[in-house]
View (cartoon, one colour):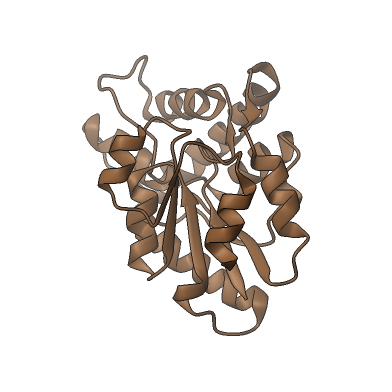
Length: 225
């Protein structure tokens, strides 16, 4: 059994900044600030890690009460923003997911920095949430490598058997996606549909580098031979 673990933002979809804007607004409310004092990047990180980083950059310490208050604010803002933005499912994604879902020798899961409810909101809005039965999410882990381990564990629980890392494929758009694939012994497919260029992704040494996911045959050949 093969396992494909997909990143979300920049790999499957783009939300037109619906998520980042909701995150900033929620942080400002919880931290009682009027504006951000520092620029930050969200790509390749986890929601938990981003929020902790924002707190640290602004001289505050994250605690569990603040985290849960932030989540409530963020998820509400995300649900409001999604239908107002010009987001979309990225090129080739719908066809690839449909093709893979028809096979009985592959499991489709998520390996994302999004919190689980945020992932469901985003993928549900764009009509592709039904393809994914399990995943690793950014609710608890600042480090994406820990999310990768959680995703592999979730795949094994779903499958009911141990899964060899050699049969696991992480598909993402950032060097961190490649790095976290390595942390669990999985193969890495890097796709240049996010903020990182093909040259930047090549430097991370993925097993397969693609401009986008339009060539479903290239992906399936790589996975199944």
